[in-house]
Image (cartoon, rainbow, N blue to C red):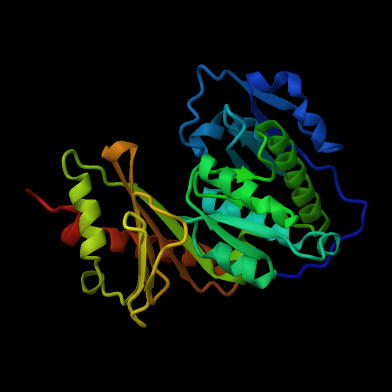
Length: 349
């Protein structure tokens, strides 16, 4: 969405940088330049960073509200994953999920200073990220690549594509964001990217929340949900059920394609075309439906965990409609889960 930028005399930007104590000597906060953002270092022995979500950034919530910050930026212990917090219009402290964060960063990466890279920019997208990323890449004429999820998979894809000479951003639904294959250098580049994004939004008299809403207006409002559907002794059976008897009629959806990464086989149900997935084998099956619904079922940790990832979109025409549209897509995904639970997930003995 196009905006008119305000005059260069923008107000002072305020933020919080949340870093592991092990990063103290790296002086990453200096990369924020003139932004007022004293770093907060957390004890890596006391803070659980398995999931980068609202709970991870919760220690910053009070300060964020009191200081009326523009952003909070947190890193996990390894500096390989990142999460962005912000205040909404009511002053409530929230965080972007990995899909929303990836959309915002990809949009900025592709659209800022485009003249600096006349040959284009490349985005490597983890397979489970919603199709909003695809839309953003297409609209901004970026070069598209796909990767399996996880840091190592993204890093391998990143290093492989470096021969192109193009600027590259790689991201997945696990909060991994790669601008460099070196974690410390990458953290610095992410901080610089976020600084440039927030400065750009401030010049537009916008912010993280409003920009997030504007992206939903431009590329349709996407909703994503992940559910842990692990069931002792049943995970493989449920996973294979999605692969061999994918739900369609039971959820009133027309199945368009199946990507069975376990067998490394792709099939378009409408045309009958079959082929390899191009990414190689993984414990993952993805189903795409004509409505835009995307279901990904992932078997992890040697089969001990099973995750269901859902993504779908809905039209959202203006900012005032955003709360209702967001609730509608949330309710729609929950209905799909309930239907799946009746016909696929609860298999019994």
